[in-house]
Image (cartoon, rainbow, N blue to C red; front, top):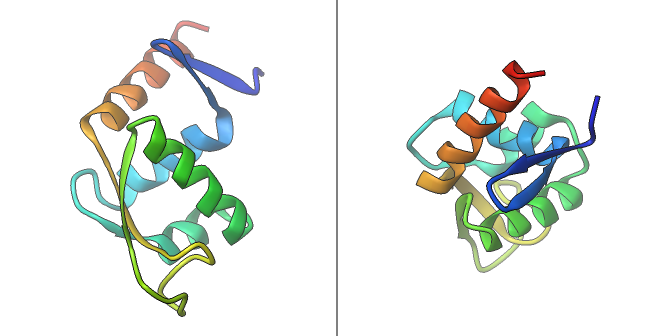
Amino acid sequence: MNDFVLVGDEVLNNLDAKILKAIKTISPTSFVSAVELSDRVKIDKMELGDRIMNLKKSGEVDIVTKEFVSSITLPNFIAKVRLTEAGRAALKKIRSTSKGR
């Protein structure tokens, strides 16, 4: 199995795809708790925060940050995350790519 998925002009790591899928599973349209997302994808919270920031830069997610790190945030201040239209489109592309294998 490939470690990367081509989505349009972007290459997403399978872990990034797993993060997008988990967000959609929790709530396809609303913000979800970053801590709940961390519990769902079972990766290091710092790594998850870094990946979420990369997904934000590429337009797949929006985030809400807090001023201070707390029990409701990831170590890099991310409190909530949601899919954007681009994130939903990326998931559709991922599904169609995986069906074609």
